[in-house]
Length: 107
Image 1 (cartoon, one colour):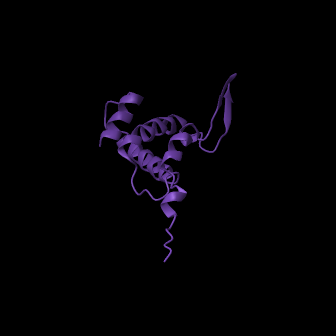
Image 2 (cartoon, helix red, strand yellow):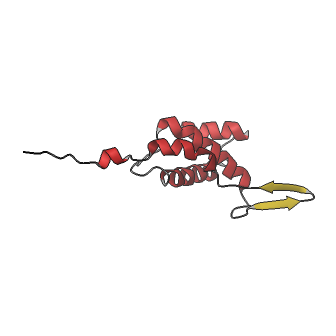
Image 3 (cartoon, rainbow, N blue to C red):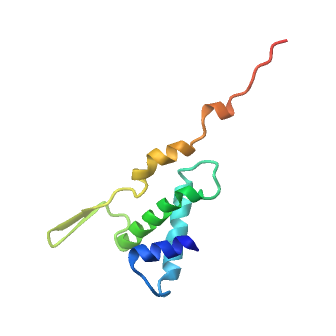
C-alpha cells in the first residue's frame, strides 16, 4: 500500500508497530473524503496526496479529536476541518447540471 508507506515516511516511522493505527486513520480519511465526492466510490489516484496529508494531520492530532484549539504552557494550537483547504479541488468533482439535463425533440 503506497499510501501507508508515504504516510510513514512523512511521519518518520521506520517500523511496523503502528501500521494498524495508520491503516485505520487512512481508511477513515478515505471514507470522510468520499463524502465530499458524490457519486465516486473510490478516491481517485490523483487525489491520494490529500489522503496522505490529512492522515498525517490526524496522526499528530490524536488525543485532541473534537477540539477546536488547545493551549499548553503558553503554546496555542487551533484546529480547522482538515478538508477545508481542499474544497476548491473537490468542487471539480461535483456533478454539473448538464449531466442531468435531458433533451427535447419537436416533431
